[in-house]
Image (cartoon, rainbow, N blue to C red; front, side, top):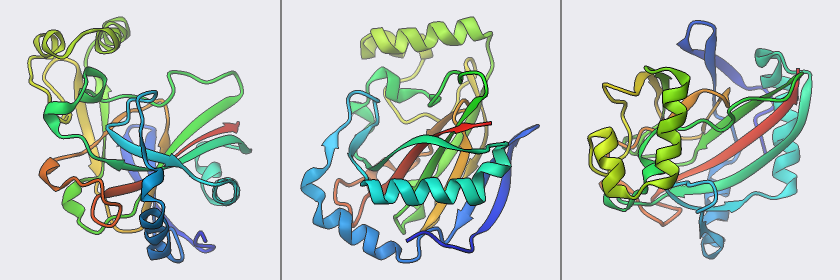
Length: 232
C-alpha cells in the first residue's frame, strides 16, 4: 500500500524547521481514488475541526500502515522513537470563499503544544492531478503570542462580518497578511505526494483557484490527512 523504498526530501520552512516530502507515496494511488469514489456517500461535513469541506475516516489497516511507515522512514527526522497514536481521514476541500467561517479564513496549527517527552506531526497526501488546486503553505506569526491567541479566540466566537473588520478582508482562503502572519513558503501539490511537518507550525491549504473545487472525489481536491503523536 505504501511505498517500501520512499525517496524523501526536506523542504526548509524556517531555521531549524522543515517539511519532509515523499513523492510516489502509495504504490497504487488510483485504487485509493477509486475507493473514495465508491464511498462518496460516506463523506460528511466536518464542523468539529473546521475543515472547509467534507471528510471520512480511514480504516484501521491504513492507520497501521501509516504508523509503521512513520516509525521506519519519517520519525527519525523529527527525533521520534515511535508513534503513540494517529488519526487519519480522507478529505475534500469544497467550500466557496464566501461560505467560509472565520476559523477557516486564517491559518491554523494542529497542536498548540505537546506533553513532555512527546511530539506531533501532521501529514497531507495529495490525490488529485490538477496542481492548480494547491498545496500547503506555512506561516510565522508577526505579533506577540498573546495577540495571536486573541485573534484565534475572535475567530472562534465572532460572526463573519465582525471578523472581516478585524482582519481587514472579506471571506477568502488565506494567503498571509500584513498584520498577523507572514507566509514562509509553500510546498506545491503533486499527484501522490505526501508531506510531513511539525503539527505546531501554523499552516493552511494554498487554495488559489477555488473555482476548481468540487465535491466529486474523482475531480476535487482529494487528500488523506493524518495527525501522529510520537514519543521523543
